[in-house]
Length: 576
Image (cartoon, rainbow, N blue to C red; front, side, top):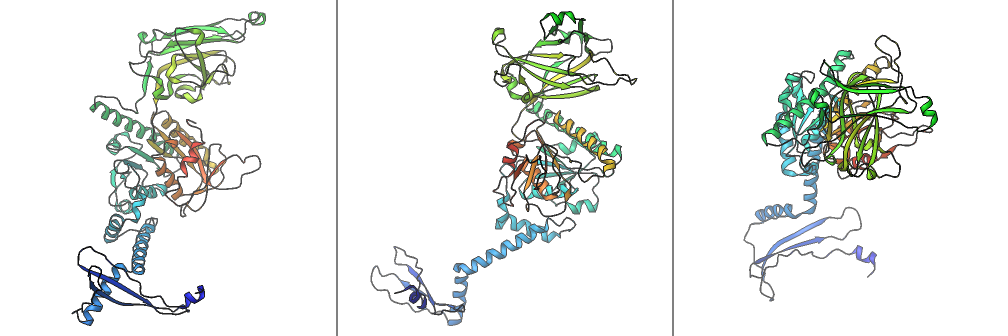
């Protein structure tokens, strides 16, 4: 029979049988589909007839004593349970209802009724479509959202809730308008990020922090309080909380820095050696040798000062000491150094010596340059920035480091004006040392900070906004916490996941980005190891200008299975 002939014939009865080895009844479902070549063909369900098993013999039909009306009702109820069309329609209705509720979360100004929230929770939990958003480990993670009522913060809160996180929101005041912006299950904490006394309760029992607060005005004091002081206060309070937990466990917090040296007395200067040398060993060097000198003293004001001058061509002076680490502690568990120093704005070279300390022929030297400011500052030097003095030497292995040296050399010094406005002599220096610590390493981000690129800010106040933002970023990098700093382009109020995103570290982005996309990056960065200690710009895809085509383009699809953040972060540099 040809295919056309087969299509023209009606289907015979289609039997669904429940076979049982026992002589119990079996149900035969008969389906009769009438012959039709038009689109109006119908399906008729003939009967649902119980038949007794006869062990291979012909079965006899058992009359059904049920009246016709009751039989039709029973048949219709039974068919609803097995009808694939009905099941598909029901599942679509459930998903449409869930999607309507879910899309309503994006309507920030909408105040949900209590019955709507209860029905949404029931659908999310019992019916299951939104369970696909769950993140492993989210149930045991509490996230503090600072700026939860901001444009990005409101979306961040809802994304965290959908993924199963416990969310705390730090807000300035809890009036009815603020309460209506946040889901009922969010714990609201009243406090001001600029006031350290009000944020201790906010960080209690928190595992991670997302900071997306913005200043209400362009006043310098307001910018400083929110963008810098707020970040500093939160990082300090979070570190204090982790240290308190470690003390309760009779241990040490994994986020604590390792103290290498603290210069608080004359005794703390023991073991430090002042040395001098020159890069040139020829007649010309001796001809232009005008002398050099350096000293390391503990002054009457309680400061450890390394000072001196270098007038010799190619000369340098340095301060060196062999490290004395606690028993069982090695620097491979850390990823950088932080120095609290003060002085007159000179630049220095930090040198680490690795290899066998007894055999000087096998030693390897690695260097990294750092600059200071006039006055006190903290300098962060990651181990990844150290380069070998000999190009053939392997990269630095912090496990083998045993000696640290701070070197001053007159070359490559930038002119700095003194307090009186006169330019200082670049061949003299003064470095006040307060402490040296090692920054801990880790697997995940502890603190996500939403900063900005400056695009979209009025040119008249762009400089002061960026200055406050950069100060907050520097404070976070030096805190010892694992960080992710996101600098989005101009924010736009539109759905996320609609366009490809560009992740860049070259200050080259020119486009905007939706608040929803920024919020999604914040949430994904919480458990992505490649996002730890990364600072980057992000915006929508665009065609780069001539000569600026080098950027990483990552397609962002609205699919939870598409982990677009990991490939984007893997090509970016850490500790920038």
